[in-house]
Image (cartoon, rainbow, N blue to C red; front, top):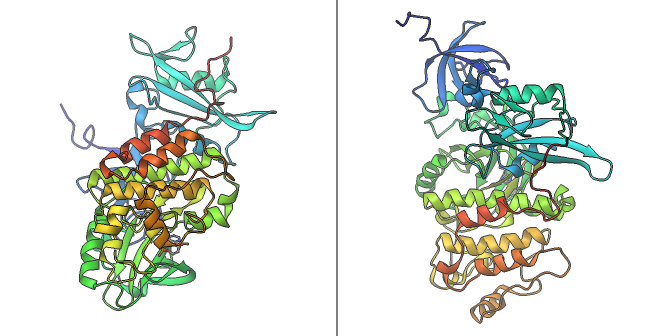
Length: 470
Ligand code: AMP
């Protein structure tokens, strides 16, 4: 028997604060409870707020089902459980300055489909802050353990026990790792299918730089949401072609691709409104920004993120055509996202188009693309190899001292950029670059492989997993 208004009610609890952007959406703060009225739309759910009684739309990824934390069944909704986080990302999240020693998270194991990993921030005199990882193994009859002498009926029970007593862990579990706020893909619920927005709602506040297509500004939408606005120089591309491309681009969503929010295309100059990335382009970041001080493992993390975004484009069969450090943007905590995917194709500019103009990125482009205009995901892999070299040399210009023409000629004869002498680059990674620069496109690795390679690249001195001490 299902009692109306009782068992059928679905309650969600807010994991983050959210400020309404339009009249149709509902504000809430972390911990507020709401009843779901309609969840058929993919991004915006209709709810009624249980305290304010306001009815409206909320971004679904800011809330979780409100269920008891003591039951194993509901693990995915618990605050310390990070469902889609790799070991590298766990390190990154835990090492944020504000997290004290003992900050922790639990994530699915990358190697054991039924197991989990516990990652804990620790401190030692000799190493400073670092993260230790422990394997949580499943028991045959249900339940989990880290050390065989301490078994638990559920993950919450395990976490609770290690929160009271270290029991041989490096440190007692102190507080769950704060979760990064999820991405919102639209400016607001009314704009989910509306690609064109009103130009008056955009304030351009500060010039960020100069791109291939025109000026780029930091700005706000409705005085509220931070955005980056690309303005397109008149005549850079046909509006028609651009809008077609933009509509496709808006459908591409991945955590490693810069989100495209909207456009203003009714008048010139056209605006492209994007997610704002606070640290700017990877190239400037490496040369003159905080990126100058990155450690080797941070470079690996960036290489992995770019490969992950490109793996998504590979899967979706979209070719980037202009992958380079200048087209990767950096946000807080060394988050890297690819931008301008798909744009290079619609630029109506002889300089930029695959005919040898001065702005054509010869040093990044595969020979078959330069000579025959044969762009493919494999020519993107070539560019990725060049990007890796930019990354590991902290933003050096590729083929230093060589002109574009010379590069084309030498590459055709089999010349490849040598291993840098002034920067640390393991032989393994250099030979991977050479594979990206194979003259035969099909012999170059896939982005799936490259992503896997960098995600699993462990610094040899690192201990893969810890055992608890007796
Ligand atoms: P681009 O047209 O992509 O070459 O951009 C030119 C410059 O503007 C870049 O080098 C960045 O410094 C900056 N920029 C572009 N897009 C963004 C963004 N979404 N967030 C922050 N800065 C950006």
